[in-house]
Image (cartoon, rainbow, N blue to C red; front, side):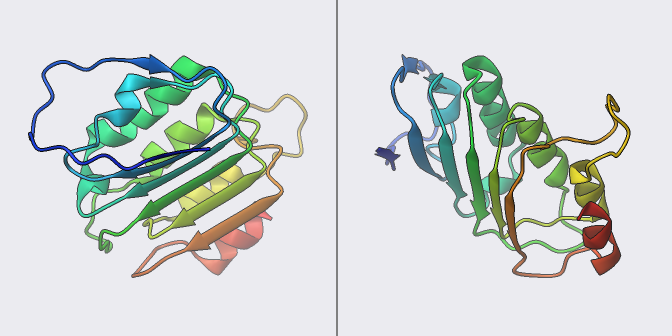
Length: 168
């Protein structure tokens, strides 16, 4: 297992070395405003478990979310478990992160376990995870192998009981 928690003394990274972790199956990242560049530097083709904690207000950065999706797109890993945790405070006025989460999930079709903590979600998220009963339908079935999902919302959210029921 590799646990990455880097502390940077400079706010901007001009040169970004890249690394391919050929045999790493588990990766836990703790990203803050100074280390949010890390997913841009990694390729992890054997990754089965990814856990990311977005600290402070870093979860508000589109670049950080995009870099995670790009890392998964670049790596094509056999990802089975994904945890995304945010310590930021969200409300209905907060920018939506669910589009970024859905983008990450599109690069992770084999996920069996999904844990989202501290994210602001709506019924759009539940609809995206709903299994479509029509074979070959491309509208849903985002994570057709999903066996376990944990969603913990700290604050206000717009995911309704009806949306979750439809997903199930």
